[in-house]
Image (cartoon, rainbow, N blue to C red; front, side, top):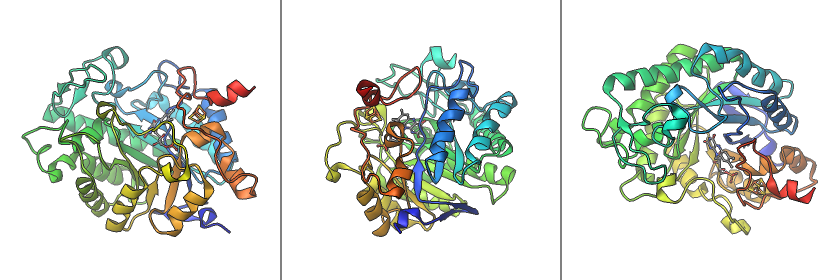
Length: 362
Ligand SMILES: Cc1cc2nc3c(=O)[nH]c(=O)nc-3n(C[C@H](O)[C@H](O)[C@H](O)COP(=O)(O)O)c2cc1C
Ligand code: SF4
């Protein structure tokens, strides 16, 4: 049997196989951020299709942290009941499910978040054309508390764990980045200070939810930006959060401002698959907790090599599971060994993610 179908532990949790659905914003919440029937159908299908660990799309922990229309919200108890329907649906199958908790930071619009977007420092974002406002020290404390409350809600709703979104230029990763974090107080400067918000969120979640409640992170390994986060700093961040009890690290990279994000289009051959895998392998050499590889993984053989060669412990997929939510089942049955996703990025559909290529064929 392929090593990919062997169970793996994430902290105290046993996950039935090594395939992860990486967080994917689905444009399926209602306008206020409540879970809808479309979510339940989406997550049921992924679980029925044998995905070992499903990570939801990013749910925002404060109203100001809304990144996209029809995004799930987790900033208030009134969202609990809807959120609880997701683990209830997933747990009809052996799959596990984590809620990704996030704050958009400066990567939003005033119209969406109904405020002036916030950031560690007031650094203009030429992509969103936003001039953010610097967070005060008191507001940083509130932010940390709100991440912790979101994790408590996730646990109460029945999620098996949470993923902290510290990638792609969103707020937690913008604290890590020396480009967006120019603070002169204890939250900025050397990487030991830039990681503090992430560390304090992690400590707070572990204190409130218990050490056994799994907490993983999606970590930028590089911003691809002059003066931004570089791999060597990301390795140090990985070591520091491991010492604080993180249960797993999913390695991503990129930010919109760099012109090089996390969702690369036009991948062709197997040699272009796994565009963040080398960074994952570098981080894996530095830590003992499970490392998740992602970025354009499309072929069973490529996924198998990543894990067999010890470059990562789990493999994460997003677009291939939009294309076919049953892909992992098809891998297991041997009915296919490669995703049909052509990485065209036409699945970003504000009326709900779907594969445009499939729709075209019908
Ligand atoms: C439609 C769409 C929505 C996404 N939403 C999120 C998200 O909410 N949080 C996140 O961390 N990454 C998000 N991503 C990035 C994916 O998790 C993943 O890192 C990236 O697509 C590379 O993996 P892939 O080549 O398997 O698609 C999204 C990607 C897509 C295509
Ligand atoms: S539209 Fe379909 S083929 Fe194109 S990237 Fe999305 S899932 Fe893949």
